[in-house]
Length: 137
Image 1 (cartoon, rainbow, N blue to C red):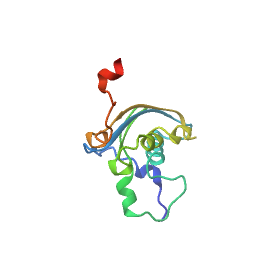
Image 2 (image 1 turned 135 degrees about the vertical axis):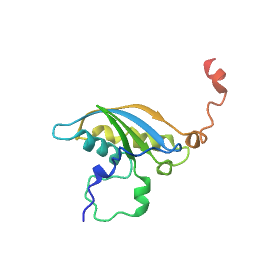
Image 3 (image 1 turned 135 degrees about the horizontal axis):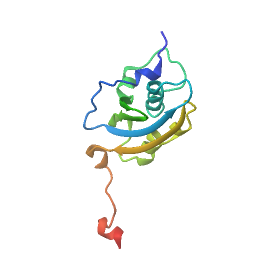
Image 4 (image 1 turned 60 degrees about the vertical axis):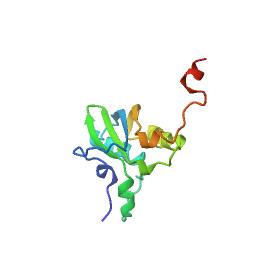
């Protein structure tokens, strides 16, 4: 049996853990694509999904996939497990949550509105060398 990726990434009853990265997107689905499918495609493409049909899936991959947990009109909230990202690797995170998902043909428009990063992820960034006051000088 083939795995239909997109709806597997949508669980509107899911409650994110405190250690997950939460992203808020504004999106507009392309013609013929439901909001739920479009949201699932965003979560899929920005985490462990693929555009091809899979016939098998290692269990570890399910633990790493993003989850759409709220859709409100054209806004969607997606949670990402922390284990999906390397510690202290901001370019990797940005390429996932704000990378090639912006070129998906299933969407007319997509904007990353907000990203909430848990303390466990942020602790790997030491901050500005001279502190906030040093930056302001």
